[in-house]
Image 1 (cartoon, rainbow, N blue to C red):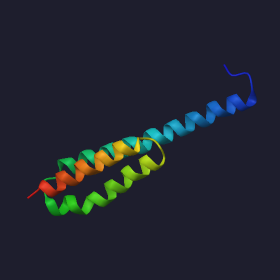
Image 2 (image 1 turned 90 degrees about the vertical axis):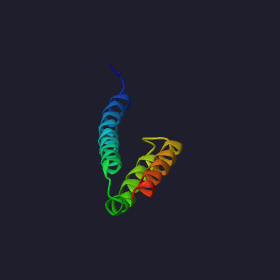
Image 3 (image 1 turned 45 degrees about the vertical axis):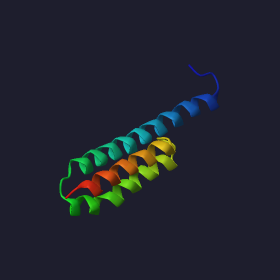
Image 4 (image 1 turned 30 degrees about the vertical axis):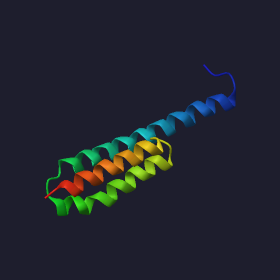
Length: 84
């Protein structure tokens, strides 16, 4: 257990940040899965900017690496462009 007040506060704040990051990451993963399951091009093109925005926010908050965000956005765009 931590001995200093500042260390105890750091433990509390890290836990709060961890929960927040997990929430945003899970929400984004679910949005990505839903987008990949869409077969209609118009609907997918409509949802793509929202999902890309979520991925960008994760990268900005350093929850995921910026390169992973770029790869994810690229694969989602390729998926949407392949749809008929």
